[in-house]
Image (tube, rainbow, N blue to C red; front, side, top):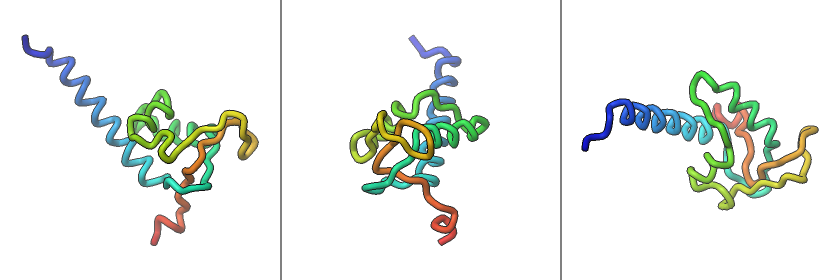
Length: 100
């Protein structure tokens, strides 16, 4: 039997949402050995994009993008910028780098 239109529409909306997240992440973060981003900082940056896309779990998204554990890892006991939990081997791209 054919797939209901509502299901197709929901699947297409989800794909579009994921593509927006992928583009945003690649435009704003770079995988770099030794780089670090506090989980709280990354979650805050994502929450500021809630009109563009909605992500419920950053770890799931990194796994989906095939970045989890290769190269990005997570250390729950490490502290950065006053908060616990650090994504390692990734860092935010600075504005000066984006301009070049």
